[in-house]
Length: 343
Picture 1: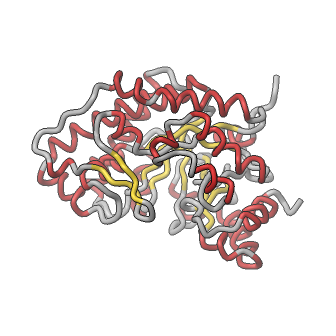
Picture 2 (picture 1 turned 30 degrees about the vertical axis):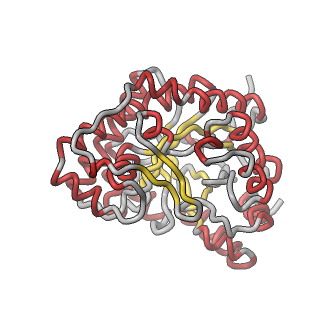
Picture 3 (picture 1 turned 90 degrees about the vertical axis):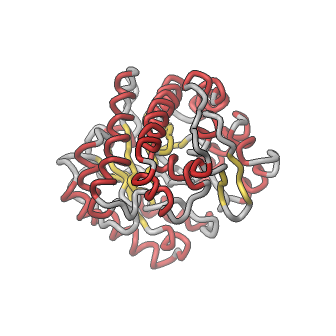
């Protein structure tokens, strides 16, 4: 029987002498070959819904760097697109949606129709799984219900005041929206696992600035429902939760959501996170993406500090946020070399 990929061993609670490494947004604009590939689709959503293009995007960084995991190339906003909300991307500015806050009555497509719309994503997972070596884990993902709801409510990312205020002003509507996103996201993740994903990540990109009561209502509770629904659908693979910006709410997320492992953001020290996460839980992170842009001695020192911060438990090396377009591929190569012991 083949040995499990290093990433899965760590997610199962094993401490390895060298942490496995992957990079959030490792398929992306810092690679010249990705920028060329992106020109082959007329829109970003078209790119995400092309199994051939999505698979090629995933394979590009793996050809350059000995990373321990591949992650599906897609976007968290395919879910609102699949339930009938218009989604588009503005070059240099990011995603846009028609704001739900401008609409009095909210109606969405059923989960069954949404999963049909998302079928190209699952074909991409199948293709990626067939293309990567056995020792490389395949990560599927979705956006957390609150993060996706934030985009849907406001029509864009950035400041989250309008979305948070909606919890006070239209609380029943927002709670119902979160329930819709729990169900569709659970089925979306389950389909990714059926297509070949070895583990999953839930991106909670907008956890920052939430008072504890709203954090519990909008983030902890929906995420716990999502993980429970996944398990109810027969999905047993590890789940990484990444509550970026959770701050003092990190511990509540760690202990109450049911995730297998935790992504730690740039602002949070690994030692602080280790002290507040359940004993033996795998932690992932959390190099500053700007240290990667800087490279050189600064990068080497930051890598050493990151590894030291997470000592004492299972660790997956990653950034504390996604890689930026300014990062140089040669710096990424140096990062992987440093993490793997300078070999």
